[in-house]
Length: 306
Ligand SMILES: [Mg+2]
Image 1 (cartoon, rainbow, N blue to C red):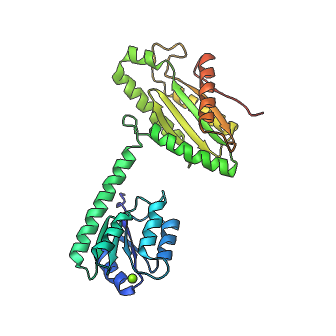
Image 2: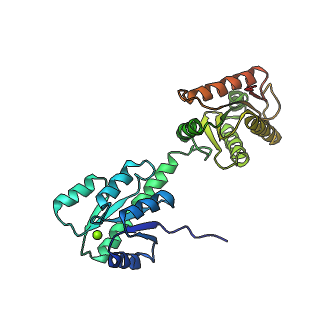
Image 3: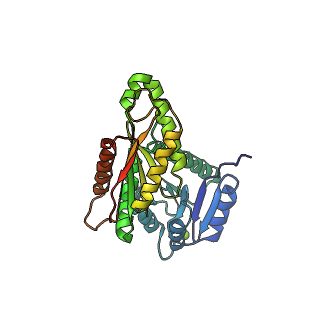
């Protein structure tokens, strides 16, 4: 059974019920539609529910007007990318300029001609979908299809701050494929790429707890981020990953560690202190990886906090 992709979600914000009704009736066929009758209600919906792909925003509303709603959404990193189209009876060029300078995508004046409104909405939705695709591509490693270092760095900062705030442990595992240069020299770079993909696929299948992230850190290096995880938890996953890769039995004819492709892992976990930088955790895990290699590779090594 194949599931239809979800239709784009549009939020209509207007304090006049007739306006909401006309727009909603005309959009419901092609989009999922949510409505809000005030600025405050709109902000609440955006904060608490699925992010809309587009917002049609009335300007003149009591309490929080459309300009202020726009300003707040654009100032919030979570919501600043949502395209906003002002729909308003204010048709002075100065109003339009003001709205566009707040970061709105477009400006439609009432009374509106529905076919034009629908065409504009369609264009903005297409642009939004393209932007979303490009954004997700920028986070994915081209060869292996798993998240890349840029994505890892971004998530590390987010999780580090969260762990700092909540005083919860955060764990990182650094992974290196053993003697990968020798593997490439011996089996060729094409086979090397295949090996990287196989290892990445196994990692992605094994690291499956919600919130955990596995990324390609560069070359034959991978990294795993584990929120709310202590050293024991990191050790368990590290041992499991090591075992999983070895049991794939990918032949490696020039490794001193094994006749199969194997990995070395270094893990570290800590509860971040207020003034500490996230690089501390990465450096710790990297040092542990260095130890794992020194001890003969094909092993996981980490420190215990006692
Ligand atoms: Mg109004």
